[in-house]
Each structure stands twice: as C-alpha cells, then as structure tokens.
Image (tube, rainbow, N blue to C red; front, side):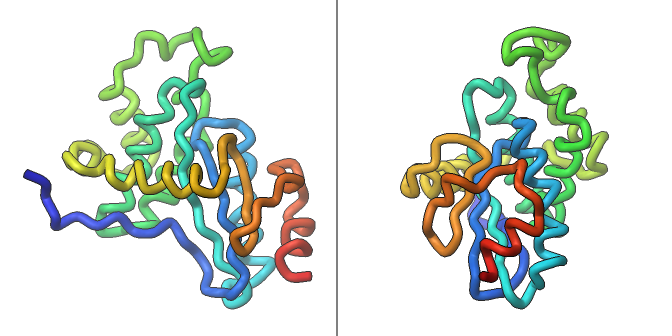
Length: 185
C-alpha cells in the first residue's frame, strides 16, 4: 500500500510570466555550472518577471544519477520542500566528485553503496534523507520529471526551454546576462 500523505514540492522559483524550464542531471559538470547560475539569474531578472522550474533528468552514464535524483526529490517531500531540494542540489554541486565515477566507470565510488551515497549527501547537505528516500512510491515523482523531459524532446542535460520552446543554442557556458537578455528581450 502506498502512503498518500507525502507531497513533492515543485522545484520552482519566481512568479513571473516568462518561464524557464531547466533540465538538470545533478552530477553532470555542465548541469552543475547551469545550476550555479540560476540564483543569480533570478536575482538579475527579477522574481516578478521570470519563473524558473528545475526538472531532474537522470542519465545512465552518470552511474549514481538515479540515487542522487531520488535524494533531491525525497528532499522536496520534507517540510522545507523545494528549499531542501535546492540545498541537496547545492551539496551535490559543491562535492560533485563524491557522487560520480572517474571517466564514468572507475575510481573510488566503485566501492560505494547507494546507502553510502545517501549518507554522504546527508552529511554535506545537513538534511536527513533516508526516510524520505524510502517512500515506496516516490518513483512516481521521479517518473513525472522523466516524462516531462521526454514529452518535450529532452535527452541531455542541461537543456533549456523558454515558455515551452526548446532553446538548443542555450548552454551552461553562457553568461547570466545573456540568459537575462533571452528571457526579457
């Protein structure tokens, strides 16, 4: 039986009419770079002018991707909601090598278990994740994020959509000012 009492908070910031959907894989170095620009983007563009929505896109070549994505979404079910998820994403970004394999197939994480990855993320974020991670039907939220990406033709991270239109030429290497210009011009 599933526990219907949990709710995952939408990973959405701002309240403006222009909507930027950002598809991230938390351990991807390019997604980490894009994630680091979202706060400054919101501050520069204005919370009343744009809305930023983060969608998590698990990618199989990042071997702990599924565990980390589930941790972020588990955090969103906690009382802090989307802010807990943001803190967990920030912890992954600050310690990315602790959640990734060397060359996607080697290194110290070869001996890490999923439980150790969760404990590591709890230590870095300061957020207790294990109970929320174990919500039996939390996979429905993971699937919702994956489905939204697939329905919009998203296959890699980071990817960006503005008002529902894919921005194939927008990337994590762009300056925040360039993103502001694209959203507000």
